[in-house]
Structures are given as C-alpha cells and as structure tokens.
Amino acid sequence: MSAKKRLSSDNTNLRFGKHGWGIIFYCMIMFFLLIGFSIDGLNIVAPAFAEEHGLEYADVLSMATYAGFVGLFAYYIIGRINVKIGARYTSGICLIGAGLSYMFYGHAQSLLQYGIGLALVVSFINGAAYIAGGSLVVQWFPRKKGLANGLTTMGHHMGSAFYVPMIAYLIGSVGFAKGTTMAAFIALGLGVIGLIFIRNTPQERGIYPDNVSKEIYEAEYFTETVDETSIWTVPKLLKTKELWLVAMVVGINQLVTTGVMSQLVVRNVGLGLSQNTAIALMTVCAVIGFAGGYAFGWIDQKLGVKKAILIFLAWYCVALAMNITENMTAVYISVFMMGFSIGGAANFITSLPVSVFGRHGFAKVHSVYFPIMSAILFSNYTINAQALRLTGSLRGSYTVFLGLLLFNMILISIIDTKKYNRDYKKEDELLSK
Image (tube, rainbow, N blue to C red; front, side, top):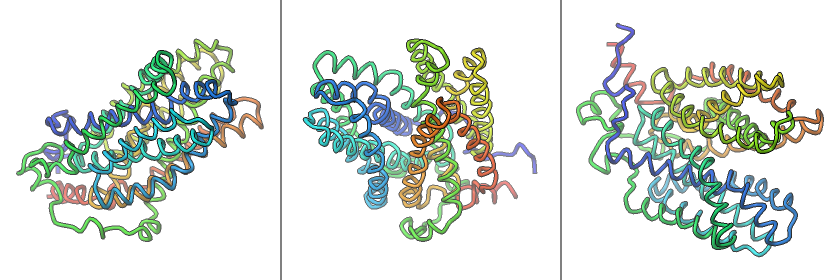
C-alpha cells in the first residue's frame, strides 16, 4: 500500500459549503462572546462595577472563582440537556440565557446579585460555545475537525482583540447598565438566529458531513444506524481510561494557557517592562493567536491530532523555557511563541475527544468529559497563588507549567487517538485493501 494513499474526504481544502460556513461563523461568534462575557471582558466590567457601587475590586474579582465552580455543575446539566434536545436548541437557549444573565448582572445592585449573574453568564456561554458548539463541529466536520476548529476558535482572539475596547467604549459612553445591555443583545440576536437557522447535522439540510458528496459519504464514512443514546452511559465513561486521559491532556493544556494569559501582564511588569508595554505584548499575543489557531488546525488535519498536540507541546515548552531565563531578548521571543501556542490550545478541546470517541454518541461523552477538563483547568489559580507565595514571582509558576507540559507529552503519547471512532475504523478498512 502506498504511504501517500488518502481518502477523498481527507484533505485540507476549505470547501465547507454555505451551510458549513454558517456553522463555522456561528461557533466563531459564540467564542467571541465567551471571551468577552466571561474572561477578558471582566478586565473592564469588574473594576467598573466595583467603582460604581463603591466595592473593593478584589471582592468583585473573587466572584469569578465562585462562578467557575458553579459552572462545573452547570456544564454537566447542560451537557445532559444537549444529549436530549440537540445542539441547535441547546446553543440557542444558552445564548439567550447568557444575554439575559449579562443584562441582569449589568443591573446588579449588590455583590451577591453580581455574583449570581456572573455564575449564570459563565454557565450559559460555556454551554453554548463549548458544549453545544462542540457538538455542532463534531457532526458537521468529523473528518475536517482540525480545520474547522482552527477557524471557529479565531473567535477567541477576536474577543481578546475587539470585545474589550467595545465594552469599554459602551460603558464609558452610556454607563454600566446600558453598556452591558447593549452588548447582551448580540447574544440574544445570535440565539434567535441559532434557533431558526442552525441544524444539528448536515443531513437535516439534505447534505453530508464535511460537505462531501453522497457517494463519498457512503463509501468512506461509517453509515450504519446506531443508537446514539445507548453507546455510552455515564458509569461506562467514568470507567474508560481514555476519557480521563483526554480530560487530563486538554485540561493541562488549558490550565497552562489560562495561567499564562491571566498573569502575562503581571509577569512582564515584574521583568521590568512598563505596564503599557506589557499590555501591548498581550495584544501581540492575541493577534499572533489567529495564525497559531489556524496553523495547528491545519497540522491536526494533515498529520492527525496526536502529532499536532506533540508539536504544540514541544513549541510551548521552548517558549516557557525561554521566558524562565528572564533574558529580555529571550522573553520577547517567548511572547511571540506563546501567542502562537495559545492560538492553538483551544482547538484541541473538541478535536482530541472527538478523534478518540468519534461523532456517534459524542454529546454524552462531552457531558462527562467537559466538567472534568474544566476542574483541572481551574487549578491554575492555585498554582499561580502558591508560586507567588513561595518564590515571590511568577517564574515559579512558569516552571511548574513547563513541567506539566512535559508530562502532557507522555500522556498524549499513550492515548490511542482513534480507539472508539467508527469513521476512522472505516477509513482503516478502506486503506488496508
């Protein structure tokens, strides 16, 4: 058999079709709102709320931690709902819920109300973007998930680059309550669009996954009828080692990425840079992330998710090692390299689990995997805090992050990234003939 033999559906072209591109842009905007509503936008919203109500900024900021832990339980519930009603309705309802919750906490009159509103926002927007959005990508692009994720996660970088100045302008122009309400209408509008126009699978539009022809789909994809609701049960998933390995690999990637980005300005100021320069470097990271996201998506598509993650981890390790030296030339180079890495990190949140488990029954898998992965991610706050306490700088936490990435290289190496994927099994059968 020729080493170059490939299936017709295994390619790196961007011919997703008009409905496929609709799914990509829908998911991209959800990621834009995710970053704006629950992560980067808090750099503006939290201090503005504290100032308006005469509260301590640290107290307002602490609400994000509580909201994150509430989200762990909410993600499981939303995941189960997604199994029952499908990604179309789950995403639409969650977007509307996120918009209404953003309005609520924009009008909050106490720290408790703000905290409740933020917890709802975090739960709903993650439910829309990651849980429902992930299911859409899996069903629409099972073979071209690498490229699709590389495009949809550009919404992350759009949020970092554009949402923060947008919400700052709105709050500065019309006030806190009206500013957040105006931003909330983006989520409300997108939710209505999702309910009307989005479909759970391409077959509901009379087309086929990855925008392939009927002939290619029937020849190269697994087409037998399976009971999606009974393939996996929660107890069976919890006893499956691949679920835990996948959650650990992705969780550690996200732990490191969140830990690096949340303290990047503080880290660079500690190295002697001015705050303006440090903020400018963070913006550079976000811009470079556009290229990194697509590049790692392309590598995923071309070489497979395991090789893509190994390359990603090796690149990230070099970046952190250069930063730890605290040589300023190396630090500037490391910022470029970290921006490229951060751009690719979000791709693997969906790409790795769907590669291992496949599209059949994926909603059930995702409902268990995503909360576990998120719990690992949240430990980055503890690592940063302990590093500061023990060493007096973030250099210690970056050293820990480097060690975790090296450990991740071992974990991804032992995962069979095609084990339960029926489409890959069909591919192997065809290529072995």
